[in-house]
Image 1 (cartoon, rainbow, N blue to C red):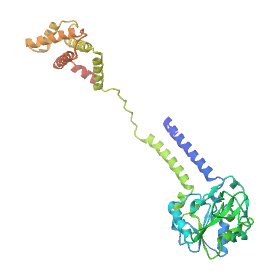
Image 2 (image 1 turned 90 degrees about the vertical axis):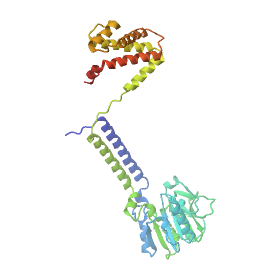
Image 3 (image 1 turned 120 degrees about the vertical axis):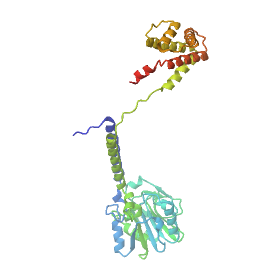
Image 4 (image 1 turned 60 degrees about the horizontal axis):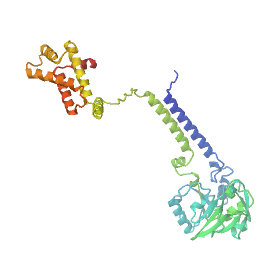
Length: 396
């Protein structure tokens, strides 16, 4: 059995298909860009941009290192602890930034890398530099320190730089900009790198990078917290899914399901012919017509129309000539229906008919007089049941 869709259903399915394709393209473009999820310096990643080698190296050489998969607002006490923020791609919340500030002030050490890492720090003079971050560069030491003595040169991808007028202590530069700095804050210290290249799987083997990384960590007695929360790793499955591209796949499936349900429900629901919209109801028509006569000042026309209609149906019912006089018409009514044996009533009927004849050609007829005549005619029509048969015929 072939599936038949009307024009509206085809448009709905076509629109849903276009949106679905656009969502897939957007997910592919943003999900497989120059630096995919596997290229983040995560301690779980074995890709060239990952950092699993550095994490395992620290664990095997006796460093107290562990992964941190909670928000920064849950940071522990700062004593003898080093926090590694490797290439965060989201801005911190206000609570996280305040807790990190307190963590450093109370003696904690932070190694923050990348163009957006400065947003986490209490003092930030970093400037993103996308064009310089396309190639690897060698950075030389700028100032004497324990770190620069261990590694006079390092290799990294400078995705940002630190402003030269800052009060931070410059450690390395690429000849144009400062790419590694440190500064104290309270009892703690902050180390900022332009990128996480020295601790990545590919960058760790470059000359000077391993020595530089270990010198930044210092004493092996310090406990190292490798933040994986910023890379999307959460303690609960639901939180990890929300931070991963899986949510976009779920959104696409929900959109497709909604389109299918909407199409099916439109064709499976009760079918009803829409009621035609009436432009005017009978009462509105009467009011409109009355307003037209009132505006034109032609009360005689209204009397003439009603009078001619009254005579037409009356003579038709009586079976007499249409040009019969008012006196003969009154007599015929009396003979047929016995309207009244009272002479006054007969005289009144004749007077009303003659008044209507003269009013039909009177251009100066006043509206109250015309209304009185129409009421008289309507009263006689109701008394004679003149239009009752007409209404029954039309109802059938």
